[in-house]
Image (cartoon, helix red, strand yellow):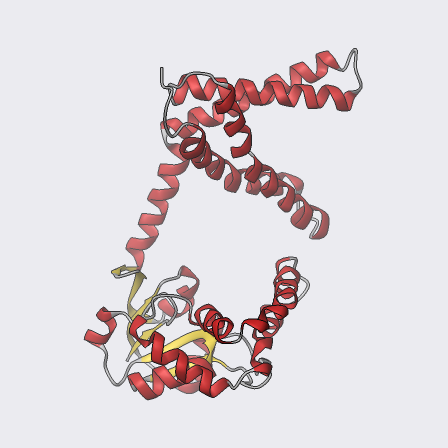
Length: 322
């Protein structure tokens, strides 16, 4: 058999999110449930509830709609989002294995496409999970529980999180939009992107500029603290360090004039980096008590490339070159 993931693989989008948007268009008053849904996501983000609990909170809107009628109308509008490449190679022996709810996918997958389906079991009336979310290793467990002697010829997914199932197939493929590539090629492409991001000349210069800014902060803060309050001296030093980093970026990397407007944009570009660091410290250091070196390293690995992209595209994207 050939096995496929559903969302972003043979379906162009996330079916659960699309269905929720469709419901809101029909029943806009259900937006009042949004705070409850967001709170569930926040609790999951902080490790307070399981993914199943979070998704149950998301699907709370099912209690207030005629679900089957809404699903029928939804697929009438959205079945066109099944990708053409899949329709061209579809076989009756195909099996769709998805983390999306079974009640949502069954009308399309089983009735319209006429292929097999394994998906997350969710009570259509309450949104409550029946068993585990069909994700990762659970997909493998569900597959062999339903088909003990299953032999997977080809497996298709958009996500490396499906690696447990991909390992069971003779051939596995990663799907990105309409493009299909061998599973191992995707890993190579991912590593190339990492290499390109972290070892590019401009990025290494960007890290150097940031390091010089940090050194400037230390020296200025130490010097000013001899005469002023330590908190005031740190703020002063941090401001000077940002300007030094901005000036070095402008001259060494992007060949731009040093302007006040450019400096303001540069400061704005650093806000996401601060938010990432703050979030990592709050969650992984204060709540989960991870090693602080690991926490700061992870925050830097995520925050630095993002900041570099913002600086490149927002601060120095045009105008006033030397």
